[in-house]
Picture: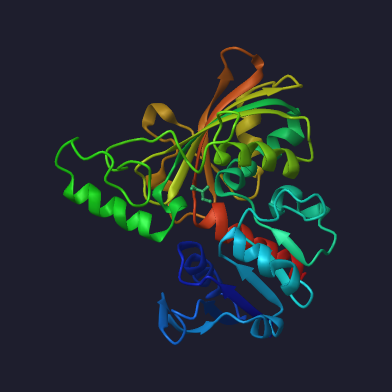
Length: 329
Ligand code: 2RA
């Protein structure tokens, strides 16, 4: 039986990973800081005893999921990968040339057996499920993405804060009263996710640029992004404006192609109110896609679409879980 460690098991992504592992027969070891060691963690029907993280305990595991900070991953990731497969959810290794950044249904075929593997940022992972098949079919020329990102991306305390602020909200007087965001998120949208870079884009926006290029294997792909935090709880939504090298014969061709793509669910009957929303994509394994139309500028060489995917599942833990299945094969 394979032994799997989840390091950072008390965080939102770590707990989602434990839920996914519950349906497997893997022997799961929960690890966290000394502070949490000895506590019991109940995830659905299973109670786990939390152990303190140690390099020695990880070395006894076949696979180690790192759901921890980038600094922690940088300190231990390469060392742990001497004994185990290490799947790192932080951004620490994503942009290293020799370390694979995997979204298994999109670029899993290029995996060459490396022991340290990076899991992408959530908004990239969600977009790539839809962009991959479209790129293969029509050849992407340029991509413009606007994201609508849920509180869960900022962690478990941020989700709690949003719930509390939404319940307690009374007026617009207290805008800066937040511990998890730069401003109060309840009844608000904030065009600021992660820190600002010198080029005026946030690091979250640049992550999407770098990661799409790496996963699609197209370093010159033209991409621009705007990342916005919105008061949804755990599903991101994204607007995609795409320009293709090839002509698209019909929108039904696009719907059929996306319908056949793994991990994608087409929801596209807008006049009947059937489109993708955080409300409907939450807890789903698939990314919802719809509002499929020709782009008004690029005509039959362009598409506009809207997508939504569960940030903790499709955007993080489920992708890491699929990497685990890939390395276990
Ligand atoms: C966020 N992308 O939504 C981050 C989480 N990985 O803040």
